[in-house]
Length: 341
Ligand SMILES: [Zn+2]
Image 1: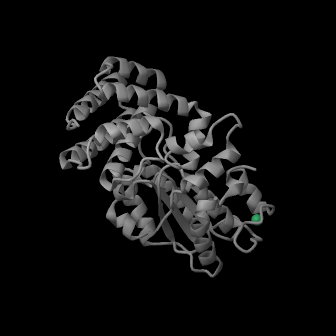
Image 2: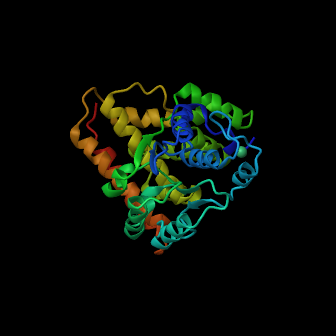
Image 3: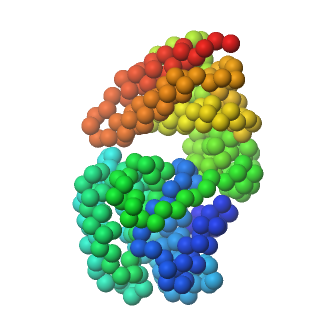
């Protein structure tokens, strides 16, 4: 069974029931903004919802799976559904894409049912694209639905957010993530290790499994622990980053800074973390009291890592080595500022 056929996943059930029930009674809003962590299947969820909206013989709260419309939806090309994605080599969703989407929504639908536009990673719309979208949001056409999703809702203009119905998708608990991963990864792999590395985000865990990501992530975290302890050089860490891939490594750095801030702020138990993450956390948390300046530095680090990620994805000839040197130098400075036990 494809992943799309499995929508809704267990942790999406509540949100699914709410939206499909609203659709059944004709109360589905024109536009939704679905927020939630990366790697929990938000985009697949919007495809699943589009399929449900298009289905000509829906069962109670699910698409029938066998009508012509469902077959089109399953093959990724329902003629009444459009999905905007970031084009190859581009860093943004562009104004031309939004304009062609609006043009598409204005035409009559092929099936006479409805039209659906999906915008995943909606925070990646550039200013022009967001302004163009605003027009469509302000003047909705009948029977058209916009499904936006993002893990960074705060990065969208307030004007867009205020015109969408905001709903959030929860990250599952660890047991749910492990159960789901066990069904989707090869037998020899460890679902607990994947769930820990992925912070219980099942689809991200699956991606780690597909790309040798778990091993790479553990290797990089170990290197980062060494760097923080002054036991390896920035150059050696840059070399490992090149081997794994700079874009991937920057994502690890983004993730680890989020984890550190979250755990330091809440003083949570770290039993849900994997060993490398736990080790870093204990390095950053020498005593009970957490210094505000360390938290602020970590948040600043997160911003720089996000910006580096954008640069690496851009088509302006970024220099990965320089970007990594700068990020890792700052990391080593950051870990030096930790008060000693
Ligand atoms: Zn159907």
